[in-house]
Length: 316
Image (cartoon, rainbow, N blue to C red; front, side):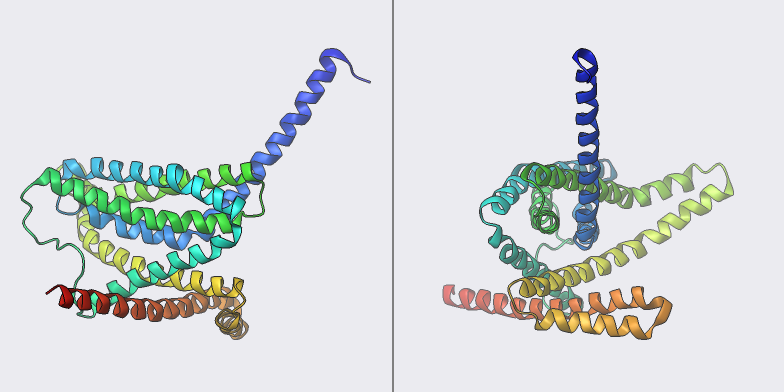
């Protein structure tokens, strides 16, 4: 039987193997949780570039940095402790809160669709004259961080629901990992998107080869198209994720009809489309969730604006 230094080294080896296995399990769980939140991540990446429009190129990256730091603060300082407390002491409250966030996403997505269809535009107007640049930057940054708070809450709640069975410490580590990795990924992508036109312009002006000039012009031409695609994808992600969260939440609360309908349609499409069944089935489920999202969002939007108009009329 080993004694002394040999026994100590043996114990250390066992502890190290256990720690390595735990780290591996945490990594797998964090990856799964982040994947579940992919729809909200797409939405976050699609929404954020609009907050750095109307600024000079030298202010774009500093503003993105401020928003990214605000996002990390949202996730790690406010949302992570709240998520852990809820999961530990009020686990039943996670699903209703997640559904409220889903309804908010549906509302935001429906608002964007209504605006595109010619409805009244809500929120700030980008065409307004900017009188105080510093104040405008501070307001725009604060607005972006507030929007990020909602999206970050959804990301953390979705991740929490995925790892609710893990021990408290593992939950904390997984949620922190998800928060940091997603923030870096989102705002790294946003920085590339926002600077794409500047990179293209630099290549056009300072090209050393014809390929460099063509690449630069291609980036400049692609930028407006990319922003439009991001806008559409972001809105679709809001509606799809919001609708899916509400449908899943209803299922968890015992209302199985909407969830059963979506799953039945998805399964039927998978059965009749052969090799493409997985992809087309997923799009069917996402599409039906999106339809549910836009219906719910439109109802909420009509109610909200009806209350606002009534309030305005009373005050007048």
